[in-house]
Length: 147
Image 1 (cartoon, rainbow, N blue to C red):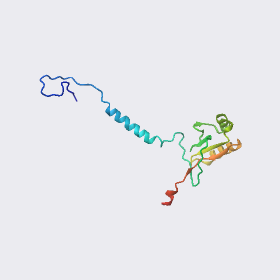
Image 2: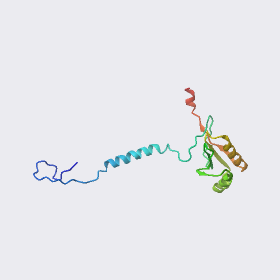
Image 3: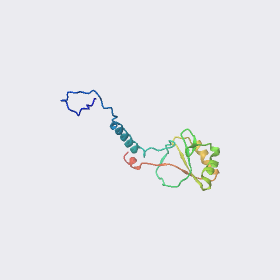
Image 4: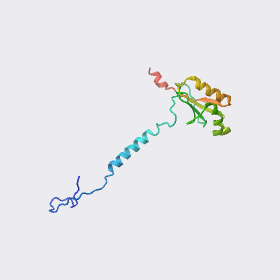
């Protein structure tokens, strides 16, 4: 699309073929604003970290304590927070990272994990003197009433 530089009139005898070459930033701003809105809507939904689908139970007590979290994946891999760790070094790594204030830990295991790795982690933490708290997800009781 060419723009006339003679004031927009058609009655002028003198015609120029020059075009006005300016960048139109309106489409760019539109795309950026749409991406910003999408990010703002989905950012609170995203959970960062290791993907673990914990089992659902009826009674869950909410707690706000900041404790070390041991994550067990479906494959049986063990993580201290987000870092992979050997089960034999688990107690020493917790003491090193969190100091003597860590008397308890959370164990978060995927619901499809076989029990053997979970039992090993629980035994290792129990032998080291930690109180073990298992992370679960509350069951949706409203959905059960509709069945």
